[in-house]
Amino acid sequence: MSDPLLVVRDLHVTYRSSRGPVPAVRGVSLHLDRGETLGLAGESGSGKSSMAMALLRLVPVGTTITGSVTLAGEDVLAMKPGRLRAVRWAEAAVVFQGAQHVLNPVHRIRRQIQEAIDTHRGNGKVADLLEQVGIPRWRSDAYPHELSGGQKQRVMIAMALACDPELLIADEPTTALDVMVQAQVLQLLADLQRDRGLAMIFITHDLSVLSTVADRLAVMYAGRLVETGPAKEMLRGARHPYTKALAAAFPTIGDQSSRLAPSGLAGDPPDPMAVPSGCPFHPRCPIATEECAATMVELHEISPGWEAACLKL
Image (cartoon, rainbow, N blue to C red; front, side, top):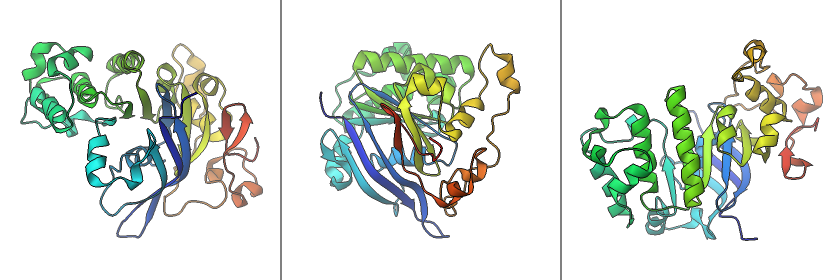
């Protein structure tokens, strides 16, 4: 069996602010095999995007990253700027959330994709890349404002694939799209992942989205992983109380009772600068005890290939 493409060990990401250090990621460890899709889920503020952006050091100046990130056998955190620049897009690329904020409104999309190819020595052809993501070749001369939201997101995917990376990080790429377009983009990503043999980290707050794309799931809360395991099994029967509540927050199509069922996810995620003691989920957890408030539980195996961080499991 080959070594994993990506190995993350004890990753911490701390932002600098006027209020002091803000710990967004607090000791995350995971791995990703070649050709595998990992779904990374959690509420806004859980640290999932911070964790993903730290993998390529795409974080604001002044941010502290500690731990270990190994991509294809190389230590990303130890890379010099020149090597890091070569790795970005060529070996690992990002599809950002909200293409309207990423694409330059005064340049045609052909120029923007070509710039990525030229900068990172890619071999792709713009028209071919656009066709691969379902956009006619002749639309390459369009400006971003002439495209729909779904088309702009497809352009972002084409740009990310321009240099044929091994790893694709998709940061909530369908959040701003309507349901029909969202389904089309999800299918596109699944097809590209299969056809190109890509490894992919797909970030979302909606567990139901991951049912069509992910091989494994990892759920984050307050900067930590609380449950990881095989996608299908976790989606059918999550074990951690937070994952259960997160799954119940989204109704199942065709199941009227799921629209009326309470999710059990009351309250708000904690302030990263004031995370509760013990299990950080205990103030919102329906089965929490006094022991939960005093004991920090690490991920532990609850069945083969399935881990959770809960005293009750």
